[in-house]
Length: 90
Image (tube, rainbow, N blue to C red):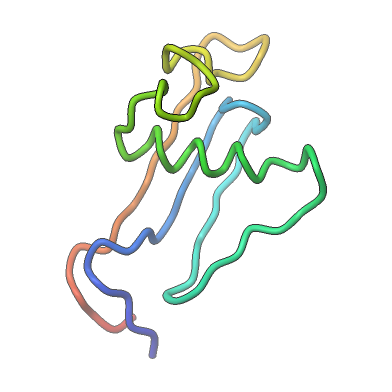
């Protein structure tokens, strides 16, 4: 049994977002690390979290508008974040 506190990020799904065509991340219930070589998408994942949680793109210092995060050559993209509704065991 695993305990996820209310508000924990359970899943992040991106489509045509920055460097990602389609990707789903499922963080664990405790400490999560994002490791990888330069250019592997670590910062893109952090941007997805911020944009998906309604932060202004200007806060990230990468773009002035959300549309600038759509993958080059694509018309649309999205970030979908699922949060834990309430404390519960899964």
